[in-house]
Length: 75
Image 1 (cartoon, rainbow, N blue to C red):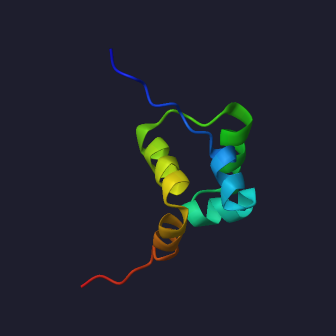
Image 2: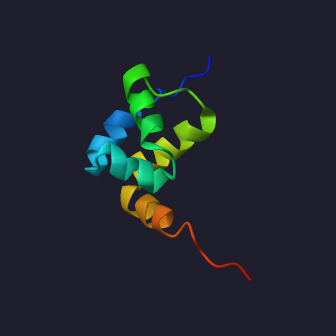
């Protein structure tokens, strides 16, 4: 049998990063209402969101730095 990877909760990751819900929302580029919904109703098991949370959990400095460069110029 395969071992299932435990789901991460956005609140736990946000707190480890030392961010408020509005700060976390800004970093992720989502409305703060989305963060609040995740934290009230538990974070969805969406694979993309879970991958992002896992990266933020394992490599917080690099991930936050990458998120700060969302508006890179192309070409």
